[in-house]
Image (cartoon, rainbow, N blue to C red; front, side):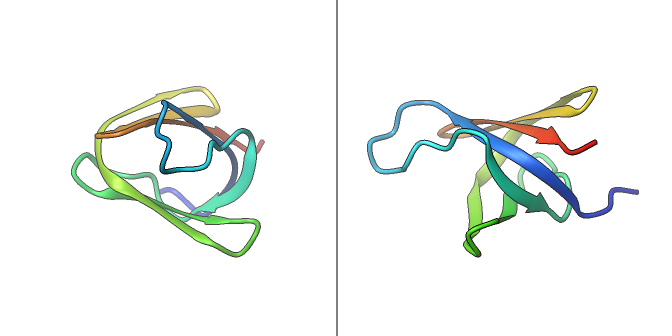
Length: 78
């Protein structure tokens, strides 16, 4: 079972309509499933919600989440 976890999020991809994220502190309530959006609570108090997830891969303390428009790297706090 996944518990809410602090992460550092980085967004990869070029999209002029969105600010680039690099190592931004956030909290993830649950790891996303394919077809669901990724939702995070940024340290700034904003809620970030992506387009539906197309792929999720975990390697140690890093989770890579692909969406229709971007790729996100979530570094889980240890």
